[in-house]
Length: 170
Image: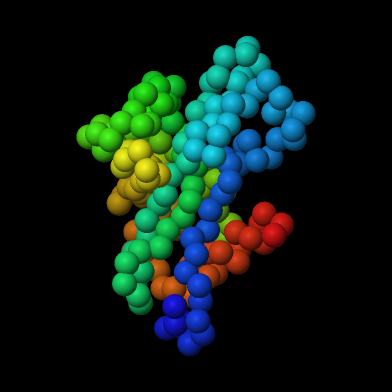
């Protein structure tokens, strides 16, 4: 896609995280017996052995200001145990989009912004063949939330990709 900022062509890929930061930072040895994980859902067991933190892989849509459509982020959200049960039970249900949105918190640090861990979001199930959608609250004063709610240019998405790759050592 031709960038209105620099005039170059940018492939419009979306930055994403493979796991919640707390799990990504753990060694294989630390994960053993404590982490239950798939590419969509993760649970972290506490010291007592019971799972006490629950995460869901989601997508945060961001409007594009200089191109049609949206871009977005592939982010992990932490949900309550009760909501994790609702999500798990509805995972393959074609009617899951009827479940009301749930309170959640971001589980990834987004490079270039003040800490985004625990930033409040709403999580909405969208269907068994799509990732749940996150939305930021319009009253948030966090710079990441403000920028995403306002929309970004294609060049900013490229900046996000570069910063995310750099932070992950890619």
